[in-house]
Image 1 (tube, helix red, strand yellow):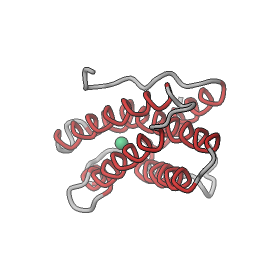
Image 2 (cartoon, rainbow, N blue to C red):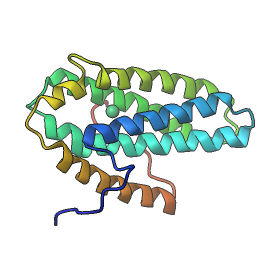
Image 3 (cartoon, protein in one colour):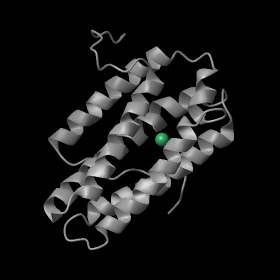
Length: 173
Ligand SMILES: [Fe+2]
């Protein structure tokens, strides 16, 4: 069934704009965590960061990356998936030990550095992933609709209860 919904002013223009908006959101959450002092506030922010990353990695791995397999460099997609798995190991660990974890700040710091690197690989001009994706014939608006629908489903799931731990796609831990 085709997805049709009115375009609101905050609807991203295409699939890449959606992913970039997610990147900006999680970067802002990392900044908020850094400036937060109270432990309960830090735990809430850490949980939000983990949920954002679980949802973001799922829509990329289920919908975005497979759409470009065979159309952009395999290495770019493979490295992104290994980076995702590395982040997921930390995300799952953070969620499992959220309360009273004296290592929480260190884990979030390292996670933020991993994500910054990953975002750079996707967004960098030239041969970054998104630049390569823009040169293909994939319909980025149709892809956006698919990703938005899945994202809404996952956000509703996160609201109803804790999301399950992130599943590793390529690393065997
Ligand atoms: Fe990603």
